[in-house]
Length: 363
Image (cartoon, rainbow, N blue to C red):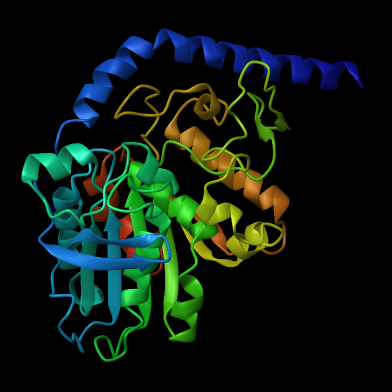
């Protein structure tokens, strides 16, 4: 091994060592954040979607600006907006509706939908029906099983949501579904874009699916390489960071929803799916808005913008000729869902319009 390559590995190992040390030092802050995250939500979505699986049945709370069981012949596009780690689907639903309003004629015929992934504290605080699905605080973000009323993956709930829109008696004019998420919502959307099973049904129904991943803390890697300080990719040193290759950061110790699939073709299928990484150019604060600062997360980069750009570089390197994905950067916007959806760049991505010249992008 050359001196330069040896030095690169040493630097990478040292970076992971310090990442682990920083993660250990931040436990007090994590504990304080946990108390906020574990508090019940302020509002519960007013509609319910049935989620029926071989593992059991449950219902998912959903906001939508049209009754889901009533025909909507005017709907041509569905904009799904997944909430962040606070589970505040009402805020994200409002952001989605405002984005449609601001799009004017371009947004005409759009239906906004915001699912809500709850935890047991929410169920208890609102006295919700016993069939209401609830996950752990972190579990819903990565397709883990619900803790009640049945062991249903949050990815199965996403399947049910998408498959609902294949009903042509309800949505005869529907042509496009945009599955978007910001922050923690972008974490589940990115992993679902990899492993989600509903796209086949959507394609069969003649509906195009576009995944929009906005400012997540972390991404799913397909091998053990991670970015170093020089923008290259080196094998992660698990001695200092034993969880770096485990789900939801890597492809080890997969949840059942994923492990039961043909893993040999899962990455190639993901590369073919239409995904846009919408990244705020000012989302560079390494401590803000519950950013994941665990060792596996820090191995992906120092902040959300750096992690997103590094991940896309990684994908392009693995799929130089067959990647149906792109990066669009949003100038002057940080970790702000409203700012992302309301920006000219975000509007162009969500509603399939030409990007303004002010939006840096990597096709």
